[in-house]
Length: 516
Image (cartoon, rainbow, N blue to C red):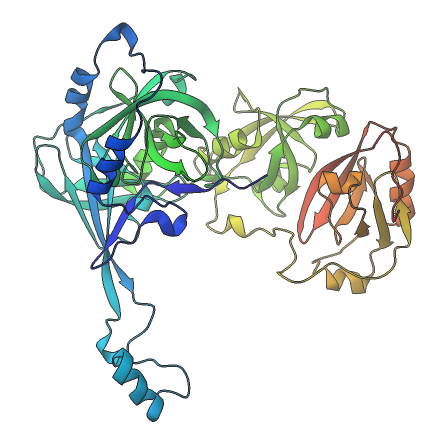
């Protein structure tokens, strides 16, 4: 499956040259406005006209909303890749220096830095001049200038940033008599609802596009808190930070990203406004967001995992894959294999929902978890801490580039799973860079096309448990796996680096012999 390229919808310019999003895979981002307009004129008309509810024009709605939608122009200082006065080693003096100065200009004549400009969008939602936009629109900006539809311009002061959610809060300096828009309820949106996107695509001010909510709860790999609204209302570079309205004229999302046009069109993403509303008080008072943290690694409860954990097919929840030592979760007694099904009285259907829910709990607050442990219901209360900035640095369990897993011949093999195994010796533990008291059984080979490979096992993985039974010898893995019938799931707990996860491996109907 090919990876979808997601692009932040901001237009970038520089002095003397155009720095466009094409460097991130977007070929059209830096096209001059005239070229864009010409392309629009030449584009074929849609085969089916969009039906506006009630057959009425959107003109009155757009006219009422447009005054509060703003153009945001930022300036940042970019270091030149060639630092002034620096030549390759051995060439700073003598004939080589004279050669470079004669034909390429003396390094001291090249500027160390230059100014880069970008264009984005935003919207005023407060009479005091508060403006919401995307963090990536104002990232690294040394100057922010905000232009209204009526032609007025103001300096924009950045008073709050939240990179994980890609939201920023600005305040217009010395501004009064400002138009505003209302913040709506993104949770009330349903697939198929009509929406209106407004902003400044390609620097074309005060543009509007119309479409529907294509989907909700989209995860696109932007961060831990992905929960995007997907829409086919046209979103292009320059739309970043602009509002997505419902037909009541309420802001329901912040336009943020698009799929690369080389892959697909009509697919844009917006941050739900309810997520932004949750963090607004902190952005305004503190300038940043403190999120709740339990100290667990979680995943969605798939059907295979459910079967391995003894739960019925179709069960929903978030599986605790790993508990960080000495974390709030560890102190509260959470265990790997617990399935969280409720948070503070609300159902939890997936890992993302749990992650966002815990993040919304203020540090020091209580997260009341309803969970299933070995099929039994249990209630656990966790006093959450503040999420560390480097939580993403938890061990990923991957080998460094170019490094492979351990060598050596296997001491045993499991034809049913399609793996070869060997005991974990102190020497192997050092090769695998395992910390602490390492135990388990090492996967020394994975059969191509076998059940283990299909489940994602890799050479060098360390099997800690089989069907919730700890293992320390290869023959134990073979024995426990041998008790599983064809078509059923063997639930492995696997350590990769310093990260441990549950891996469900479905036994094939016909056994596969390792090394065949």
